[in-house]
Structure formats: C-alpha cells, structure tokens
Image (cartoon, rainbow, N blue to C red; front, side):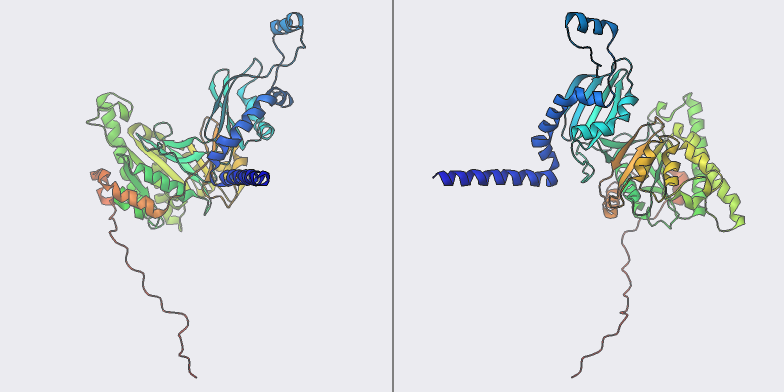
Length: 448
C-alpha cells in the first residue's frame, strides 16, 4: 500500500511538472499567473533595496531624515532608493509605481532597465513617467511578441486603429488625431506589408475615405478596391490624384474660413467633410525617374505631397507613407516630406543608415533596437514619435485574403466623393483562372 501511494504521488508530481512545462511554452499567461508572478514578486520584494543600490539608483537622505535615523532611530544612515507606492500584477507582468527622491530623474531609471531586467529575471523592463516625481516600472514576465494576439476589446473607434502589440503587453494604436502623418520603413519580408494590412483592415471599418497610391500596378492595394475611394497605380496617375487632393484641401480651408474655425472637427457635423487617409505603398516610386524629361512632373508631385504633409491635418487628410528606404538620396523634397511625418514605425532594415533615416532624428536610442531585430521574426518593429519615446511592437499575422474580405464586407462605408470619381477603382468580382502551363518534359509511354 505504501508503495502504491508513493507511486501515485510521484505520478502526480510528474504530471504537474509536465503540465507546467507545457503551459510555459503553449500557455505562457497561465504559467505566468501560477509560477512566474509569485516568484518574480517575491524576488522583487526581497532584493529591491540591494538591487537599487548596486544599480546606482539611490541618493543620500535629506538632512532631517539623516538626523532622525542617527539620533532617534539609532540606525545607520544609508542611501535612499525610490519609494514603492504601488505593485499591481497583470496578465503579462508587473506594474510598479515609484516615487522618485530628490536627485533622481526618470532618465536615471531608464538607463538602468537592462540591469534591472537581469536582476529580477524578467523578459523586459520599461519606464513610463506617470506624473512629475512618479514613474511606473512595467515588467514583462515572458516574450509577449512570440505569439501575438490582440485583445478582443481592441476594436477600431473614432480615428484610432489597433494594429500591433507592444512588448509590455499593451496595444499599439494608430491614432490619426494625435499623430496625423506617419512613415513606415522596412526591408523585404520584414513584415511591413502585414502592418499595412492590419491598418487597412481596421480603417475599412471606420467611416473614412481610403485613398491608395500603389505604383507597382496596384498589386498591393488592388485587392482593397471595394473599400477604396481612389487608387493610383503608376506615377502619372499618382501625380494627378495628389493634385486633386491639394485642390480639395484648398476648398476645405475655404470652408473652415467660412465658419471661422481652424480645424475640421470644429465644424458642425452636417457640413463636416469625411476624413481621408492616403496610403502610399512604396514612396520611392514617386521619386525615381528614368529620364531627364520626367523631372518636372516628379518635382511637382513631391512638392504637392509635401504641401499635404504640412497643412492637410487641419482639414482631415492624413498621410500613411511606406517604403524600404527614405532619405535625401531619393531626390529633392525627400527630407522635407520626411520632416512632416511625425509617427515612425521601422521594421528590420538592410543597413543602419535606413534606421537612422527613420528614427535617428526623433529617437536616437531606438536605432540600436532596430538593428537588433532578428530576420526570423517578421512583424517586429520599433515605433517612435517626436516625444523621444519608443517601443518595440509586433503586428499579428493577417493574410491578404482576410484584409480583402473585410474591405468587401464594409464596402458600403465607402463615401461618394465627386472629385475622386475619375480615380475610383473597379472592384474585381472574380479572379481570372491561371492559364495552363505545358509540362517541361513530355511523357513517353513505357514499352516492354
């Protein structure tokens, strides 16, 4: 009987250990809740002061505090770490609110995140300033970006589209009211197209006008035709489309002046024009020319695009520019246009110079993070903005058929815009069958 009980206990322990091992890789949230969270919380609690001391995140106490400790408490006067105000567990990690003592700033904590990550055995540590004197340590217990799945509550609303997941477990949203113009860079097979598909999938569900500029004969944007108000598939038609947008911009400014307001959203709802999102698939195709005679048309197109980037936010026209490389080497007007694109998302790139083009002027620290993106993790990118902050994100896998299906389902939201009627694409109802290809080797009958 004793042997049977011992055998059952051993079997139960083995099954439990095996279940935890399975959960660690297949259900990391369950493993974190059962094992990772209590272990990490305990390690943080017992080693907090010593970790802060060795990381240089302590300061000398005030004169009154030192006097009280020395004369009343009869204890040794030691450097003071930030005070822990709140510890909040999440499904992916820990959120810890710290009160910074005089002499420390958020940048000091940010500079030590790698040392804190290794000291507490977590996947990542990021710092966010919540209010003056307070910061929040956001610890992630496991690799959130390994298998990306957005929460169900993350749905498109207003002009905000959830497109990716940050490494701290929060949702990265593309907010056109806060960041009207954006640039997305990435090498081939880096996940740039997947990012754009998620964006189109979310925008298609909103009451906005979508305008595609795809100079690769529409191979990317052509499948979104049921939801597009306009589509340009070559540089010539792109130039005419951009001219039409500039003319519409001037008419909308006249409307703002008529009502005495300075922003589209201040207009009454009954006269407010529909917001327009301009999606440029490969911006380099608008700059590259094959002969000298094409220069005037190219310069006009680029300058008109720069005008949209400078002024179109107020009248509800937003730019979403994508490309593999975007710098002064493309030609006149490239840097002027890039300066208007506030939001930056950079996927894996082929050279450090491209990372500098995307993030070097707004978040220099993020350039190193871009160059460290592994080629076997498509969809991973670094998102930054002019505030100097940046975060590592990854978009969930979305196939072209899924994005096209959403565009067909919400085709009724496509606004009727007369000035875009000449550029309205014809939705393909069916795909022509592929022609039969004759075999390279003709079969021969087998004879005895």
